[in-house]
Length: 355
Image (cartoon, rainbow, N blue to C red; front, side, top):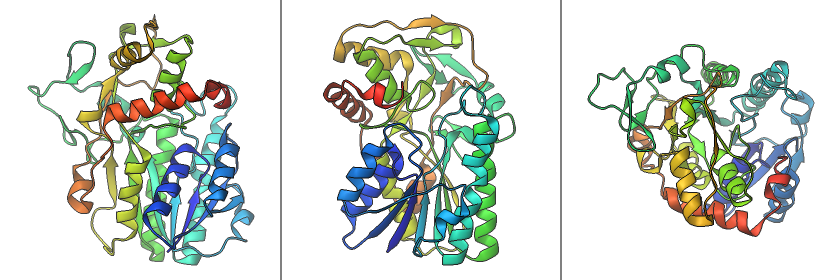
């Protein structure tokens, strides 16, 4: 099998490529990356040593696809990953559109010409912010918890958010680009006869992630806590009770492998994927974990909310389990410990991440 991985020098694309190579002898992987993200050069050198054919290219340039050999599958892991992208200085809304949506057309045209299948990595942030904020919550110690005794809307349960949850605006500029990308990709696949899978991923985390306060929060928080950098609980009364689940990209690679090897032509094409309730934790709970691991370091409370912040997001992966026998295998604390050990070995990591 021949696979093209876009955004391969990012944390997720890099880990997926490595995991697939380990799992399958004779697999041929080509990686495409514009090397825009600080630290991506580190991954390019390592991926070359693994035998991956690396190409420096940009999804926004159709000509960068012309020299690529035909692949059987494309894994699209290229995107600006921050929910605040397009709303802050240094990265405009037009740039967000070009990176996360307009550039996808060149990926789809490549898949169309090669009749290659596509796995599109999407995001939990396609879901309606208003609907998420309106869910019934209760405080369970230092974390928000879904109130299972209240009537819940379709698409959500104590197992998490599923594909049936509302995606009505606002979802953030970032989320809207992801949602539009899903639609365009599925339409291309239907129109031109190639398979498309869409995976709405929760928070991916692990060693080597270039974390920032806007994305890769688990990696950023652990590295910043260890270095005694300033940390803040933003919004929600500055309590740090907002909750996310996490999972490792090597676990995600197992699902992508199963999807690419599936011969199913119809049926469900969009899946929610994450660590689920067992891997969920609040920022306050993450701080307590770091306090136990590194010693105490208290975040500041900033009660002013940000426009796109949500109190709780846990992904329900039941559909992926039913159709592909998939579940995350790496436990939450094992992922956190992997990040912590990496942070101790690499005191310069926040600087390499551009922080």
